[in-house]
Amino acid sequence: METIRACVLAAAVVAAPAWAERPADFLQRFESQARGEDASFRASAERGRSWFDRRHGGDWSCSSCHTGDPSTKGRHEVTGKAIAPMAPAVNPERLSSERQVRKWFRRNCKDVLGRACSAAEKADVVAWLIAAGAPTGARR
Amino acid sequence: MTITKPMVSLLLALTTSALASGGREDDGERSRSAPLDPFYVEECGACHVAYPPGLLSRESWRAVVGGLGRHFGVDASVEAQLGAQINAYLQAHASPRASDDREGRPWLRITDTRWFRHEHRPGEDGLYPGVFESEAVRSPANCEACHRGAAEGRYGEREIRIP
Image (cartoon, rainbow over all chains, first blue to last red):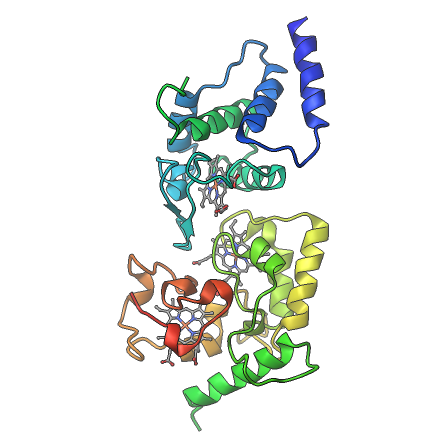
């Protein structure tokens, strides 16, 4: 029953128009996708934080370019170019465009993990980015 | 004969301004500061500044755009249609001169071209040895570290500050 509900939800979310985008929409989308595999999945900002900061078999972690603190500016590890903060609380452009989010998860996950990120990994990262820079207590 | 810097600059100025205006006009004022199309900046200016199309040949740009899936150690892939659009823009504004290595293969890097190496010789114009590897610059491809207007395509001498 739960699985069916999650599937229906996931289908609805996938079909959602491309312009309705707030950070919470991405959290909900990835979380419900992840529930398609594990009905008890719940995104965790804390898990997202340590995952973001960790290497996954290659030379880089996500924080190599974004730093471990999403409320501050990052710097591209190779080119040296500044990268605006990742936390939507500090930088409202973040997690506001389906196209950007899809494009950068695709590229950066390939560079850091050598594969695509799972929905669960994306849900945790998004939870962490939303929580970072927001008043404490928002974390879970 | 040695090619002097003003000559190179002038040549570049002429080619970029002529090409930026599609060859229809040459107002001579645009010089190196050819304006960049916002769509190009959006697609090619996230990891580094969007490089001036006039600094590589058509063949070089074709090779760069053809290899975006594995682009200097990172994934810079784009959807096929967008790739074609970027390529068309670069082809239209590319340098008419070849940018090849000795074997005639197109350079993928502006910073490998003879023009670039000539214009950025260590020991000249304040370019102290090791400057390109310094913490503040990190790579010669980090144009913006010294050319403060590079993000908007401006490389004039007044906007150079070497960190």
